[in-house]
Length: 639
Image 1 (cartoon, rainbow, N blue to C red):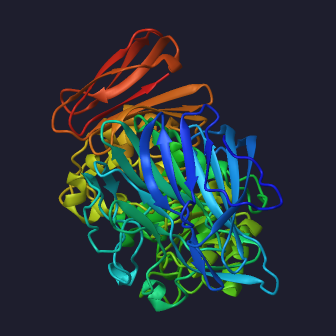
Image 2: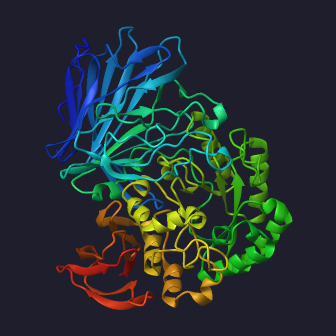
Image 3: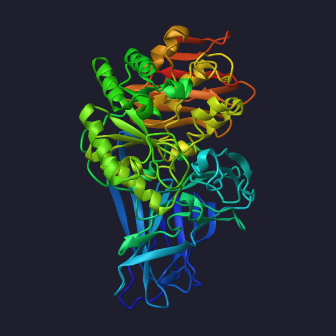
């Protein structure tokens, strides 16, 4: 680092920098002209060029005419355990820098920067000026200036109040891949987090945010302007026009963290723990939560399956598979009622299976009629529901159809989570925003959709045809920054109750098994059906019985978003290596599997007849392992 605390005279500073402990990653701040900006270099490579900093508030402008009057550095070395992300045991070592700026009115802003190996986090802090207790942030100047030759891997932000029952945006748009950074977003509203960029053949970088709670809105990136992507606040139309676009918080206070991860390959992006490194737990867990696997009747059997008889079939399936949960989807209050749910709880109890119940987020921001409605948006009815669920033995809820990214909606997420913790309930969000450090902030949070997930394959052949392409994106982009409850691993060839006609899966069974490892979420509602107990290969069923949802380590072995991916995850003493291929030709790879050690392992892969095969293999520590992945195919190694 090259920063020292300023003397009391507060002589202005023009430039200051902070680097990672190994010196490879450098964040440099320049305030020569009074408008603060920064650059990022990694092993001498320009990752971000002069990029703007600062923001404007209702009582002062902190983006121009500023003096940098102090810069204080420190080091961070902390350890934490978190079993619901990609790595359970984490050591975070970083250098930090806090710079203080003064505007012409004498008001002060601090910029806090944390730089670790491959990772940068920064945020703004405001003290409490005399006579003021709160601030409204009108806009952020914060931007990310990419080199002109960079290409993007991006998902556009949709229009507000479109789609099913006017429920968008919900982070379910199709990605553009490897496109020039001046490519316009589909709807003209920029791009959602996380955003990944390839810096020519030199490096990769990912931009996102973390630490968003009730004190701020969720943000996104604008379309680029002269190479700069800027922070954008939610659209006025979100939440049916209700709620402010500009966030406000009590003073003193801080904004969420802006995140930058870099590497020579996509590996540091897929392996980063930065979204959790810089946030803290908001409240203690009321019980020892145990997220895990569930059956899910709705995904294949749809609305007609929400009845007692079919729900019992999926409880039976969960019992046979050793899954602790079954998800009961929309409409249960009308088709079964509370008495029916209580009957299902008792039916599942001897089988070791408990229900998770679906709720609409409900409210004035969309036209959703799927029930239960008007429960989760109201603290009185919400607590009544949760009290009942705790009393009968329901273990969690899945809350759907949120209204956007305004601060008002962030408050609803936090309120639901906090109340649910009081009653010992896990929470999954669906039709929702990107999780932003929530696995660590909220101990009963166990997953979010926020992706073009499995239900879209049921609805449209287009998404079946593109399943492999999309699947290779997620470990490096969407799933890199937060739990992704996708609801996949189909063993039906046709995605409906009869297993014939309709949408047809184009990927192999081995591919589907691989996604159970590739997609990371502590709660997994798998798309299995009762008929799979008799029509699926025993190899597949045995694997789906045993595959974990909690991981101790994650390593991206090989991968290129949109083409192929091979990822290794460790649970306890056991490693799982999973690979999939979205390219038209077979993918031939020589994998370094030294971390798995030597000796016997088992490999499940695609046979010539389209069925899975399982064979014993021998791994040698210093010898690469050759594997060929068919188009739309996959493999899994267990060691």
